[in-house]
Image (cartoon, rainbow, N blue to C red; front, side, top):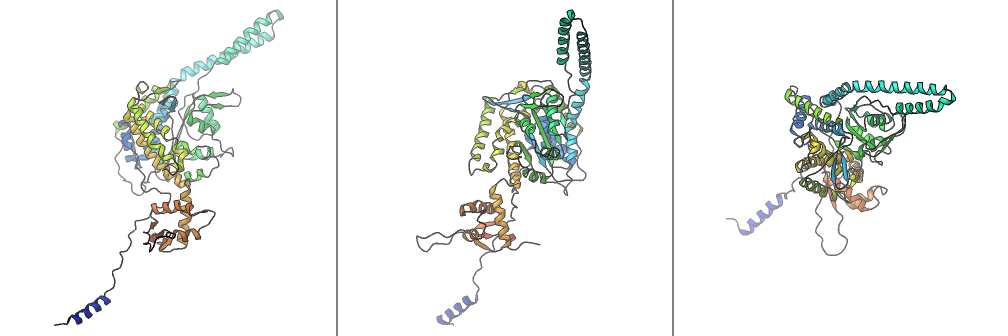
Length: 517
Protein backbone atom coordinates (compact mmCIF):
# COMPACT_ATOMS: atom_id res chain seq x y z
CA UNK A 1 0.00 0.00 0.00
CA UNK A 2 1.31 3.39 -0.92
CA UNK A 3 1.67 5.94 1.71
CA UNK A 4 -0.35 9.14 1.37
CA UNK A 5 2.91 11.02 0.88
CA UNK A 6 4.03 8.76 -1.97
CA UNK A 7 0.60 9.05 -3.64
CA UNK A 8 0.75 12.79 -3.48
CA UNK A 9 4.22 12.84 -5.08
CA UNK A 10 3.08 10.68 -8.03
CA UNK A 11 -0.03 12.81 -8.53
CA UNK A 12 2.10 15.95 -8.64
CA UNK A 13 4.49 14.27 -11.10
CA UNK A 14 1.62 13.23 -13.41
CA UNK A 15 0.21 16.72 -13.32
CA UNK A 16 3.58 18.17 -14.19
CA UNK A 17 3.95 15.85 -17.20
CA UNK A 18 0.42 16.52 -18.52
CA UNK A 19 0.39 19.51 -20.95
CA UNK A 20 -2.02 22.30 -20.07
CA UNK A 21 -5.27 22.41 -22.10
CA UNK A 22 -4.86 24.42 -25.29
CA UNK A 23 -7.44 26.97 -26.37
CA UNK A 24 -9.62 25.82 -29.23
CA UNK A 25 -8.57 27.13 -32.63
CA UNK A 26 -10.59 30.09 -33.75
CA UNK A 27 -13.19 29.24 -36.37
CA UNK A 28 -13.48 31.72 -39.21
CA UNK A 29 -15.95 31.86 -42.04
CA UNK A 30 -14.77 32.95 -45.46
CA UNK A 31 -14.49 36.76 -45.54
CA UNK A 32 -16.67 38.74 -47.90
CA UNK A 33 -14.83 40.83 -50.51
CA UNK A 34 -15.28 44.53 -49.96
CA UNK A 35 -17.98 45.97 -52.15
CA UNK A 36 -19.74 42.61 -52.41
CA UNK A 37 -23.00 42.13 -50.58
CA UNK A 38 -23.35 39.04 -48.42
CA UNK A 39 -26.33 37.83 -50.46
CA UNK A 40 -28.20 39.95 -52.98
CA UNK A 41 -31.90 39.09 -53.14
CA UNK A 42 -33.31 37.33 -56.21
CA UNK A 43 -35.75 39.14 -58.45
CA UNK A 44 -39.27 38.93 -56.91
CA UNK A 45 -40.97 37.50 -60.00
CA UNK A 46 -44.15 36.81 -58.05
CA UNK A 47 -44.59 40.56 -57.52
CA UNK A 48 -45.53 40.81 -61.21
CA UNK A 49 -49.00 40.08 -62.63
CA UNK A 50 -49.41 36.38 -63.44
CA UNK A 51 -49.14 36.68 -67.24
CA UNK A 52 -45.93 38.71 -66.94
CA UNK A 53 -44.41 36.54 -64.21
CA UNK A 54 -45.02 33.45 -66.35
CA UNK A 55 -43.17 34.98 -69.31
CA UNK A 56 -40.25 36.14 -67.16
CA UNK A 57 -39.85 32.66 -65.67
CA UNK A 58 -40.19 30.96 -69.05
CA UNK A 59 -37.65 33.23 -70.77
CA UNK A 60 -35.20 32.76 -67.90
CA UNK A 61 -35.57 28.99 -68.22
CA UNK A 62 -35.24 28.77 -72.00
CA UNK A 63 -32.26 31.14 -72.18
CA UNK A 64 -30.75 29.86 -68.93
CA UNK A 65 -30.29 33.36 -67.62
CA UNK A 66 -31.12 34.77 -64.17
CA UNK A 67 -34.79 35.83 -63.89
CA UNK A 68 -33.52 39.27 -62.88
CA UNK A 69 -32.60 40.05 -66.48
CA UNK A 70 -35.96 39.14 -68.01
CA UNK A 71 -37.76 40.73 -65.04
CA UNK A 72 -36.00 44.06 -65.44
CA UNK A 73 -36.53 44.07 -69.21
CA UNK A 74 -40.20 43.28 -68.57
CA UNK A 75 -40.49 46.40 -66.40
CA UNK A 76 -38.79 48.43 -69.14
CA UNK A 77 -41.29 47.05 -71.67
CA UNK A 78 -44.17 48.18 -69.45
CA UNK A 79 -42.50 51.58 -69.08
CA UNK A 80 -42.20 51.85 -72.87
CA UNK A 81 -45.88 50.98 -73.31
CA UNK A 82 -47.16 53.39 -70.66
CA UNK A 83 -44.46 56.06 -70.34
CA UNK A 84 -45.84 59.51 -71.02
CA UNK A 85 -49.38 58.20 -71.02
CA UNK A 86 -49.99 57.80 -67.29
CA UNK A 87 -48.90 59.22 -63.95
CA UNK A 88 -49.54 58.21 -60.35
CA UNK A 89 -51.21 60.73 -58.05
CA UNK A 90 -49.42 59.80 -54.83
CA UNK A 91 -50.58 62.46 -52.42
CA UNK A 92 -51.63 66.07 -52.75
CA UNK A 93 -49.85 67.50 -55.80
CA UNK A 94 -47.21 64.78 -55.83
CA UNK A 95 -47.34 63.11 -59.24
CA UNK A 96 -44.99 60.44 -60.52
CA UNK A 97 -44.77 59.53 -64.22
CA UNK A 98 -44.48 55.82 -64.90
CA UNK A 99 -41.32 55.83 -67.01
CA UNK A 100 -38.25 54.16 -65.50
CA UNK A 101 -34.47 53.91 -65.95
CA UNK A 102 -33.17 50.37 -65.30
CA UNK A 103 -29.66 48.97 -65.80
CA UNK A 104 -28.72 45.29 -65.41
CA UNK A 105 -25.06 44.26 -65.16
CA UNK A 106 -24.00 40.85 -66.47
CA UNK A 107 -20.69 39.65 -67.93
CA UNK A 108 -20.41 38.70 -71.62
CA UNK A 109 -21.83 35.33 -72.62
CA UNK A 110 -25.04 35.68 -70.62
CA UNK A 111 -27.37 35.87 -73.64
CA UNK A 112 -28.50 39.40 -72.93
CA UNK A 113 -29.40 39.99 -76.57
CA UNK A 114 -31.56 36.86 -76.68
CA UNK A 115 -33.53 37.96 -73.62
CA UNK A 116 -34.01 41.48 -74.99
CA UNK A 117 -35.18 40.08 -78.31
CA UNK A 118 -37.78 37.82 -76.70
CA UNK A 119 -39.09 40.43 -74.27
CA UNK A 120 -39.22 43.40 -76.67
CA UNK A 121 -40.64 41.58 -79.72
CA UNK A 122 -44.28 42.56 -78.94
CA UNK A 123 -43.28 46.23 -78.69
CA UNK A 124 -41.63 46.15 -82.09
CA UNK A 125 -44.68 44.39 -83.54
CA UNK A 126 -46.95 47.12 -82.15
CA UNK A 127 -44.60 49.79 -83.51
CA UNK A 128 -44.83 48.20 -86.97
CA UNK A 129 -48.62 48.04 -86.73
CA UNK A 130 -48.81 51.71 -85.72
CA UNK A 131 -46.66 52.65 -88.72
CA UNK A 132 -48.90 50.67 -91.06
CA UNK A 133 -52.20 51.97 -89.70
CA UNK A 134 -50.99 55.57 -89.79
CA UNK A 135 -49.64 55.34 -93.34
CA UNK A 136 -52.83 56.56 -95.02
CA UNK A 137 -53.21 59.46 -92.58
CA UNK A 138 -49.60 60.51 -93.07
CA UNK A 139 -49.89 60.29 -96.85
CA UNK A 140 -53.03 62.43 -96.83
CA UNK A 141 -51.39 64.99 -94.53
CA UNK A 142 -48.28 65.13 -96.72
CA UNK A 143 -50.39 65.72 -99.82
CA UNK A 144 -52.46 68.39 -98.09
CA UNK A 145 -49.33 70.17 -96.83
CA UNK A 146 -47.68 70.01 -100.26
CA UNK A 147 -50.77 71.45 -101.97
CA UNK A 148 -51.05 74.16 -99.32
CA UNK A 149 -47.41 75.19 -99.86
CA UNK A 150 -47.91 75.19 -103.65
CA UNK A 151 -51.04 77.33 -103.34
CA UNK A 152 -49.26 79.74 -101.02
CA UNK A 153 -46.29 80.03 -103.38
CA UNK A 154 -48.57 80.61 -106.36
CA UNK A 155 -50.57 83.27 -104.51
CA UNK A 156 -47.37 85.03 -103.40
CA UNK A 157 -46.09 85.13 -106.97
CA UNK A 158 -49.44 86.40 -108.24
CA UNK A 159 -49.50 89.15 -105.60
CA UNK A 160 -45.97 90.19 -106.43
CA UNK A 161 -46.87 90.68 -110.10
CA UNK A 162 -50.30 92.18 -109.56
CA UNK A 163 -51.35 95.66 -110.55
CA UNK A 164 -51.28 98.21 -107.73
CA UNK A 165 -55.06 98.27 -107.38
CA UNK A 166 -55.18 94.45 -106.92
CA UNK A 167 -52.01 94.02 -104.89
CA UNK A 168 -53.49 94.55 -101.38
CA UNK A 169 -56.24 91.99 -101.86
CA UNK A 170 -53.94 89.43 -103.46
CA UNK A 171 -51.32 90.01 -100.75
CA UNK A 172 -53.90 89.36 -98.02
CA UNK A 173 -54.93 86.16 -99.82
CA UNK A 174 -51.29 85.08 -100.12
CA UNK A 175 -50.69 85.72 -96.43
CA UNK A 176 -53.73 83.65 -95.47
CA UNK A 177 -52.62 80.76 -97.69
CA UNK A 178 -49.08 80.96 -96.28
CA UNK A 179 -50.45 80.75 -92.74
CA UNK A 180 -52.57 77.75 -93.72
CA UNK A 181 -49.53 76.06 -95.28
CA UNK A 182 -47.52 76.73 -92.12
CA UNK A 183 -50.26 75.25 -89.96
CA UNK A 184 -50.48 72.10 -92.06
CA UNK A 185 -48.59 69.44 -90.08
CA UNK A 186 -47.58 65.95 -91.11
CA UNK A 187 -47.63 63.30 -88.35
CA UNK A 188 -44.25 61.71 -87.76
CA UNK A 189 -43.72 58.02 -88.41
CA UNK A 190 -44.56 56.30 -85.09
CA UNK A 191 -41.58 55.00 -83.14
CA UNK A 192 -41.50 53.46 -79.67
CA UNK A 193 -37.91 52.27 -79.29
CA UNK A 194 -34.45 53.63 -80.13
CA UNK A 195 -31.05 52.08 -79.57
CA UNK A 196 -27.79 53.80 -80.54
CA UNK A 197 -28.83 57.46 -80.53
CA UNK A 198 -27.09 60.72 -79.64
CA UNK A 199 -28.57 63.06 -77.01
CA UNK A 200 -29.45 65.52 -79.77
CA UNK A 201 -31.08 62.79 -81.83
CA UNK A 202 -32.96 61.56 -78.79
CA UNK A 203 -34.29 65.05 -78.08
CA UNK A 204 -35.55 65.23 -81.67
CA UNK A 205 -37.24 61.85 -81.34
CA UNK A 206 -38.95 62.96 -78.13
CA UNK A 207 -40.22 66.07 -79.91
CA UNK A 208 -41.47 64.04 -82.87
CA UNK A 209 -43.10 61.30 -80.79
CA UNK A 210 -45.15 63.47 -78.48
CA UNK A 211 -42.62 63.42 -75.65
CA UNK A 212 -42.25 59.66 -75.25
CA UNK A 213 -39.37 57.41 -76.27
CA UNK A 214 -37.53 54.36 -74.99
CA UNK A 215 -33.86 53.41 -75.27
CA UNK A 216 -33.73 49.62 -74.90
CA UNK A 217 -30.40 47.93 -75.51
CA UNK A 218 -28.47 44.83 -74.44
CA UNK A 219 -25.33 46.97 -74.51
CA UNK A 220 -24.11 49.94 -72.48
CA UNK A 221 -22.92 52.10 -75.35
CA UNK A 222 -25.44 54.81 -74.51
CA UNK A 223 -23.34 55.68 -71.44
CA UNK A 224 -20.35 56.40 -73.69
CA UNK A 225 -22.58 58.62 -75.82
CA UNK A 226 -23.86 60.50 -72.77
CA UNK A 227 -20.26 60.92 -71.60
CA UNK A 228 -19.44 62.68 -74.86
CA UNK A 229 -18.18 60.07 -77.33
CA UNK A 230 -19.19 62.30 -80.25
CA UNK A 231 -19.31 65.77 -78.71
CA UNK A 232 -16.31 65.54 -76.37
CA UNK A 233 -18.37 66.77 -73.38
CA UNK A 234 -21.10 65.07 -71.36
CA UNK A 235 -24.64 65.89 -72.48
CA UNK A 236 -27.16 64.81 -69.86
CA UNK A 237 -30.03 67.31 -70.07
CA UNK A 238 -32.32 65.18 -72.21
CA UNK A 239 -31.81 62.20 -69.87
CA UNK A 240 -32.26 64.17 -66.65
CA UNK A 241 -35.36 65.96 -67.88
CA UNK A 242 -36.66 62.89 -69.67
CA UNK A 243 -36.75 61.01 -66.37
CA UNK A 244 -38.17 63.81 -64.24
CA UNK A 245 -40.67 65.07 -66.81
CA UNK A 246 -39.27 68.62 -66.75
CA UNK A 247 -39.79 70.93 -69.72
CA UNK A 248 -37.33 70.19 -72.50
CA UNK A 249 -36.47 72.76 -75.19
CA UNK A 250 -35.40 71.31 -78.50
CA UNK A 251 -33.56 73.34 -81.13
CA UNK A 252 -33.38 71.62 -84.51
CA UNK A 253 -31.51 72.99 -87.48
CA UNK A 254 -33.89 74.47 -90.02
CA UNK A 255 -36.92 73.96 -87.78
CA UNK A 256 -38.68 76.03 -85.17
CA UNK A 257 -37.75 75.60 -81.52
CA UNK A 258 -39.97 73.04 -79.82
CA UNK A 259 -41.02 72.72 -76.20
CA UNK A 260 -41.75 69.30 -74.73
CA UNK A 261 -43.78 70.01 -71.62
CA UNK A 262 -43.54 66.60 -69.98
CA UNK A 263 -40.99 64.32 -71.68
CA UNK A 264 -41.13 60.67 -70.65
CA UNK A 265 -37.96 58.75 -71.46
CA UNK A 266 -37.54 55.05 -70.68
CA UNK A 267 -34.10 53.48 -70.33
CA UNK A 268 -33.70 49.69 -70.22
CA UNK A 269 -30.08 48.59 -70.52
CA UNK A 270 -27.95 45.50 -69.98
CA UNK A 271 -24.29 46.32 -69.45
CA UNK A 272 -21.08 44.68 -68.38
CA UNK A 273 -20.35 45.09 -64.64
CA UNK A 274 -17.27 47.20 -65.36
CA UNK A 275 -19.50 49.86 -66.92
CA UNK A 276 -20.80 50.86 -63.49
CA UNK A 277 -17.33 51.60 -62.16
CA UNK A 278 -16.36 53.31 -65.41
CA UNK A 279 -19.32 55.69 -65.47
CA UNK A 280 -18.71 56.62 -61.84
CA UNK A 281 -15.44 58.19 -63.01
CA UNK A 282 -17.12 60.41 -65.62
CA UNK A 283 -17.17 63.98 -64.40
CA UNK A 284 -20.70 65.19 -63.79
CA UNK A 285 -22.54 61.85 -63.86
CA UNK A 286 -23.01 61.65 -60.10
CA UNK A 287 -22.98 65.38 -59.36
CA UNK A 288 -25.92 66.06 -61.65
CA UNK A 289 -27.86 63.07 -60.41
CA UNK A 290 -27.93 60.87 -63.52
CA UNK A 291 -26.76 57.79 -61.63
CA UNK A 292 -29.41 58.41 -58.98
CA UNK A 293 -32.16 57.98 -61.56
CA UNK A 294 -31.34 54.36 -62.41
CA UNK A 295 -32.65 51.24 -60.75
CA UNK A 296 -29.76 48.79 -60.64
CA UNK A 297 -29.53 45.02 -60.85
CA UNK A 298 -26.49 42.79 -60.25
CA UNK A 299 -27.65 39.22 -60.81
CA UNK A 300 -25.35 36.23 -60.48
CA UNK A 301 -24.16 34.79 -63.79
CA UNK A 302 -25.27 31.25 -64.60
CA UNK A 303 -22.48 30.65 -67.10
CA UNK A 304 -20.90 27.28 -66.29
CA UNK A 305 -24.00 26.06 -64.48
CA UNK A 306 -26.59 26.19 -67.27
CA UNK A 307 -28.97 23.38 -68.15
CA UNK A 308 -28.18 22.51 -71.76
CA UNK A 309 -31.64 21.02 -72.38
CA UNK A 310 -33.97 23.59 -70.78
CA UNK A 311 -37.73 23.74 -71.04
CA UNK A 312 -38.84 25.94 -73.92
CA UNK A 313 -41.26 28.83 -73.55
CA UNK A 314 -44.81 27.39 -73.63
CA UNK A 315 -46.73 28.78 -76.58
CA UNK A 316 -49.72 29.89 -74.45
CA UNK A 317 -47.35 31.88 -72.20
CA UNK A 318 -45.73 33.62 -75.18
CA UNK A 319 -49.11 34.33 -76.79
CA UNK A 320 -50.55 35.79 -73.58
CA UNK A 321 -47.49 38.01 -73.15
CA UNK A 322 -47.68 39.28 -76.73
CA UNK A 323 -51.41 39.93 -76.44
CA UNK A 324 -51.21 41.79 -73.13
CA UNK A 325 -48.23 43.99 -74.10
CA UNK A 326 -49.97 44.89 -77.36
CA UNK A 327 -53.24 45.64 -75.57
CA UNK A 328 -51.57 47.95 -73.06
CA UNK A 329 -49.49 49.76 -75.67
CA UNK A 330 -52.39 50.30 -78.07
CA UNK A 331 -54.82 51.29 -75.30
CA UNK A 332 -52.55 54.20 -74.32
CA UNK A 333 -51.06 55.07 -77.72
CA UNK A 334 -53.64 57.72 -78.52
CA UNK A 335 -53.55 59.52 -75.17
CA UNK A 336 -52.22 63.06 -75.26
CA UNK A 337 -52.88 64.10 -71.67
CA UNK A 338 -51.64 61.40 -69.27
CA UNK A 339 -54.12 59.25 -67.40
CA UNK A 340 -54.02 60.00 -63.66
CA UNK A 341 -53.88 56.85 -61.54
CA UNK A 342 -55.19 57.37 -58.02
CA UNK A 343 -54.71 55.30 -54.85
CA UNK A 344 -57.34 53.65 -52.73
CA UNK A 345 -57.27 54.71 -49.05
CA UNK A 346 -55.64 51.38 -48.20
CA UNK A 347 -53.04 51.91 -50.94
CA UNK A 348 -52.31 55.37 -49.61
CA UNK A 349 -51.71 53.86 -46.16
CA UNK A 350 -49.40 51.23 -47.68
CA UNK A 351 -47.48 53.93 -49.54
CA UNK A 352 -47.12 55.97 -46.35
CA UNK A 353 -45.84 52.89 -44.51
CA UNK A 354 -43.18 52.43 -47.17
CA UNK A 355 -42.13 56.07 -46.86
CA UNK A 356 -41.92 55.74 -43.09
CA UNK A 357 -39.58 52.79 -43.55
CA UNK A 358 -37.35 54.71 -45.96
CA UNK A 359 -37.04 58.07 -44.23
CA UNK A 360 -35.04 57.07 -41.11
CA UNK A 361 -32.52 55.25 -43.30
CA UNK A 362 -31.62 58.56 -44.96
CA UNK A 363 -30.44 60.13 -41.70
CA UNK A 364 -26.77 60.55 -40.94
CA UNK A 365 -25.44 57.11 -40.10
CA UNK A 366 -28.51 55.45 -41.59
CA UNK A 367 -28.32 52.43 -43.89
CA UNK A 368 -28.93 54.58 -46.99
CA UNK A 369 -27.22 57.79 -45.90
CA UNK A 370 -24.19 57.31 -48.15
CA UNK A 371 -26.45 56.87 -51.22
CA UNK A 372 -29.04 59.42 -50.18
CA UNK A 373 -29.12 61.01 -53.65
CA UNK A 374 -30.36 57.69 -55.03
CA UNK A 375 -32.42 56.69 -52.01
CA UNK A 376 -34.25 60.02 -51.89
CA UNK A 377 -35.87 58.97 -55.18
CA UNK A 378 -36.78 55.50 -53.92
CA UNK A 379 -40.34 56.27 -52.83
CA UNK A 380 -41.01 57.93 -56.17
CA UNK A 381 -39.61 54.86 -57.94
CA UNK A 382 -41.94 52.63 -55.93
CA UNK A 383 -44.89 54.78 -57.00
CA UNK A 384 -43.80 54.48 -60.64
CA UNK A 385 -43.44 50.71 -60.35
CA UNK A 386 -46.86 50.50 -58.72
CA UNK A 387 -48.35 52.37 -61.67
CA UNK A 388 -46.74 49.95 -64.11
CA UNK A 389 -47.87 46.88 -62.17
CA UNK A 390 -51.39 48.29 -61.98
CA UNK A 391 -51.59 48.95 -65.72
CA UNK A 392 -50.13 45.50 -66.45
CA UNK A 393 -52.82 43.90 -64.30
CA UNK A 394 -55.54 45.88 -66.11
CA UNK A 395 -54.26 46.61 -69.64
CA UNK A 396 -57.65 47.60 -71.05
CA UNK A 397 -59.05 49.82 -68.30
CA UNK A 398 -56.31 50.44 -65.73
CA UNK A 399 -56.75 54.19 -66.22
CA UNK A 400 -60.28 53.91 -64.84
CA UNK A 401 -59.34 51.94 -61.71
CA UNK A 402 -57.52 53.08 -58.56
CA UNK A 403 -54.31 51.36 -57.51
CA UNK A 404 -54.90 48.99 -54.60
CA UNK A 405 -52.79 48.26 -51.53
CA UNK A 406 -51.53 44.88 -52.77
CA UNK A 407 -50.04 46.58 -55.81
CA UNK A 408 -48.26 49.14 -53.64
CA UNK A 409 -46.86 46.36 -51.48
CA UNK A 410 -45.71 44.44 -54.58
CA UNK A 411 -43.99 47.58 -55.85
CA UNK A 412 -42.42 47.98 -52.40
CA UNK A 413 -40.91 44.51 -52.71
CA UNK A 414 -39.42 45.52 -56.04
CA UNK A 415 -38.14 48.68 -54.36
CA UNK A 416 -36.45 46.63 -51.63
CA UNK A 417 -34.86 44.43 -54.30
CA UNK A 418 -33.49 47.40 -56.23
CA UNK A 419 -32.27 49.01 -52.99
CA UNK A 420 -30.15 46.00 -52.07
CA UNK A 421 -28.66 45.92 -55.56
CA UNK A 422 -28.09 49.69 -55.59
CA UNK A 423 -26.11 49.43 -52.34
CA UNK A 424 -23.84 46.86 -53.98
CA UNK A 425 -23.43 48.96 -57.13
CA UNK A 426 -22.64 52.18 -55.30
CA UNK A 427 -20.25 50.34 -52.99
CA UNK A 428 -18.43 49.11 -56.09
CA UNK A 429 -18.38 52.69 -57.37
CA UNK A 430 -16.75 53.79 -54.12
CA UNK A 431 -19.64 55.98 -52.98
CA UNK A 432 -19.23 54.96 -49.33
CA UNK A 433 -16.13 56.57 -47.74
CA UNK A 434 -15.95 53.69 -45.28
CA UNK A 435 -15.26 51.31 -48.17
CA UNK A 436 -12.32 53.37 -49.40
CA UNK A 437 -10.90 53.49 -45.87
CA UNK A 438 -11.49 49.78 -45.35
CA UNK A 439 -9.58 48.98 -48.52
CA UNK A 440 -6.64 51.10 -47.29
CA UNK A 441 -6.62 49.27 -43.94
CA UNK A 442 -6.94 45.86 -45.57
CA UNK A 443 -4.07 46.58 -47.98
CA UNK A 444 -1.84 47.66 -45.07
CA UNK A 445 -2.71 44.57 -43.03
CA UNK A 446 -1.90 42.32 -45.97
CA UNK A 447 1.46 44.06 -46.40
CA UNK A 448 2.18 43.82 -42.66
CA UNK A 449 0.63 40.50 -41.54
CA UNK A 450 0.08 39.80 -37.87
CA UNK A 451 -2.30 37.62 -35.92
CA UNK A 452 -3.55 40.51 -33.81
CA UNK A 453 -3.30 44.25 -33.71
CA UNK A 454 -4.70 47.07 -31.60
CA UNK A 455 -6.62 50.01 -32.95
CA UNK A 456 -4.04 52.39 -31.46
CA UNK A 457 -1.14 50.64 -33.15
CA UNK A 458 -2.99 50.53 -36.48
CA UNK A 459 -3.83 54.22 -36.27
CA UNK A 460 -0.16 55.10 -35.71
CA UNK A 461 0.86 53.16 -38.84
CA UNK A 462 -1.80 54.40 -41.30
CA UNK A 463 -1.53 57.61 -43.38
CA UNK A 464 -2.74 60.60 -41.40
CA UNK A 465 -4.12 62.23 -44.54
CA UNK A 466 -6.77 59.52 -44.83
CA UNK A 467 -7.32 58.96 -41.10
CA UNK A 468 -6.78 62.30 -39.29
CA UNK A 469 -8.28 60.95 -36.05
CA UNK A 470 -9.07 57.60 -34.50
CA UNK A 471 -12.75 58.36 -35.06
CA UNK A 472 -12.07 58.46 -38.80
CA UNK A 473 -10.66 54.95 -38.59
CA UNK A 474 -13.60 53.40 -36.75
CA UNK A 475 -16.05 53.13 -39.74
CA UNK A 476 -13.40 51.29 -41.77
CA UNK A 477 -12.73 48.85 -38.92
CA UNK A 478 -16.46 48.30 -38.40
CA UNK A 479 -16.89 47.51 -42.09
CA UNK A 480 -13.97 45.08 -42.09
CA UNK A 481 -15.43 43.39 -39.04
CA UNK A 482 -18.86 43.23 -40.71
CA UNK A 483 -17.28 41.55 -43.76
CA UNK A 484 -15.45 39.03 -41.57
CA UNK A 485 -11.86 40.26 -42.04
CA UNK A 486 -11.43 41.28 -38.38
CA UNK A 487 -12.83 40.15 -35.06
CA UNK A 488 -12.72 42.44 -32.03
CA UNK A 489 -11.44 40.67 -28.94
CA UNK A 490 -12.91 40.99 -25.49
CA UNK A 491 -11.04 43.64 -23.49
CA UNK A 492 -8.82 42.34 -20.66
CA UNK A 493 -10.00 42.73 -17.09
CA UNK A 494 -8.77 45.96 -15.55
CA UNK A 495 -6.73 45.56 -12.34
CA UNK A 496 -7.89 48.81 -10.83
CA UNK A 497 -10.14 51.70 -11.50
CA UNK A 498 -8.95 54.83 -13.23
CA UNK A 499 -6.60 55.36 -16.13
CA UNK A 500 -7.25 55.15 -19.81
CA UNK A 501 -9.06 52.00 -20.98
CA UNK A 502 -7.04 49.71 -23.23
CA UNK A 503 -7.41 50.22 -26.97
CA UNK A 504 -9.59 47.64 -28.72
CA UNK A 505 -7.65 44.74 -30.17
CA UNK A 506 -8.58 42.79 -33.28
CA UNK A 507 -7.84 39.25 -34.39
CA UNK A 508 -7.09 39.06 -38.11
CA UNK A 509 -8.60 36.54 -40.50
CA UNK A 510 -6.13 33.84 -41.56
CA UNK A 511 -6.67 34.91 -45.17
CA UNK A 512 -4.77 38.10 -44.26
CA UNK A 513 -1.93 36.50 -42.35
CA UNK A 514 -1.64 33.32 -44.47
CA UNK A 515 -3.04 34.10 -47.92
CA UNK A 516 -3.58 31.14 -50.19
CA UNK A 517 -1.76 30.56 -53.46
